[in-house]
Amino acid sequence: MNGDKVRVATAAVVAIAALASGVRADKPPPLLWSVSDDTLTAPLGAITDVAVGSDGTVFLLDSQNFMVRRISSEGKELPSLGRRGEGPGEFMHPRLVAALQGGACVVLQDFYAPAVCFEGEEDRLCVAPDLAIIRSGFLATILMDTARIDAHGRLLVSLFAIDRASQKKAVTGRSAGVNAVFRLEPGSPSPVVLFSNGPSVASASTVQIPGQAGSFAARCWDVDTEGTIIYADPSNRYRVIIGHPVDGESRLIELPVQPMDEAKMRRLEEEYGWESGWYPRVSNVYWLDEGRFLVVPGAEATEPVPSVLGVWEAFDDRGRSLGRHPLRCDFDAGQDSYYVRNGTLVVIKGGKSANEAVHAQMAAMLGIKAESSGDSAPASDVIRIDAYDLNSHYAAMSNSPR
Image (cartoon, rainbow, N blue to C red; front, side, top):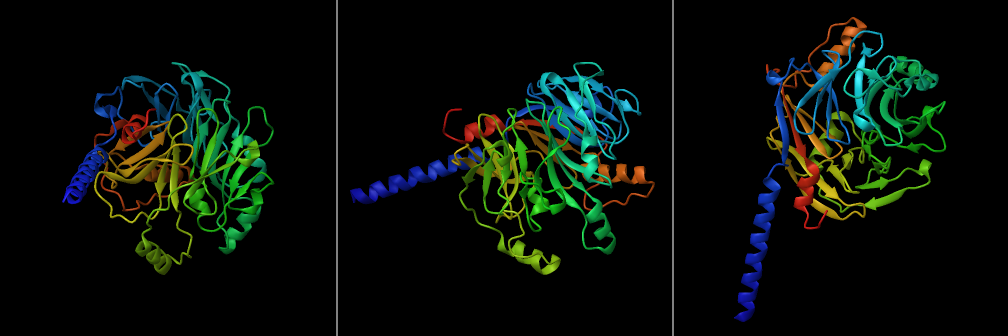
């Protein structure tokens, strides 16, 4: 009898703990600030990239209006940077923005156009990383995906490019190009190729990412403010690697295996010809603070839910889970986009999607008509920017002190 009471009491404690955990998991991250463009000095255009500085300043690359919009860590609008043109402090083909130390930022451009660097409150120019050194290996347009700059001034940029060999194959339909992640060292005459899924840019220091998963894994990386890189395991297992072999360090972090959506993978195999193992086990990875990182699992065995960004899991640098749950916030997958930078989640509410904005920009440059993908909802007249604090959110989810 006493044993039954103990079991009942234990079950009640477990149920209450699970309920409490569920309540915490259902709470969205703390909202740092929310800004609507009808309260700004000028309406927002198409936001195609976001960066967050070490002081919490959010840089929004407004490629439609050819400027960098800035919001302080308190949600206060700061003077914008840049304008359309080809002179100092101007750009014509903006693609990515990255945050530098001390409130500076750099705008990276497509079509080999020079990078433009802004320093301080005004359009004072600083020395920008020179993407022209990548030209030697490529002939065609570079389409960049992600850029980060660490405290040492090193620029990491992932890109899709067509080199001489691949360009010839592209005519016959046998090859479309190369996914790669480059690191540009200050003063270095050539970039370091960190990752590649094409042999034409490989070297002894390159991590090879074979198969279809390469196009995903090449985007699954991040670098913290001290320059430590983290990336998804190229073998496509549910684990990550901290540090890169080119730096003389590389530490494998095993993560607990989670259920996969087998039905989704079978559908991809049947409808699109994917082979077994192509679906990425890790669809993205981000640094938080103090050695913690976020992993977005691939092929999660859950149904999509409105206002949920998916199931995300936080870990410490030893691989210990600090909380795994659906990340909830005010988000509409039909027309909103989000970015995670330095532990800050930035959600772009409404407006033209980043992908459609980039496609429209590319079409204008090439003089062709842009076609809508048809997958997104109609653009909203008012754009809102919400910034959430993921660092404190996952610190609260775990029961360990920060």
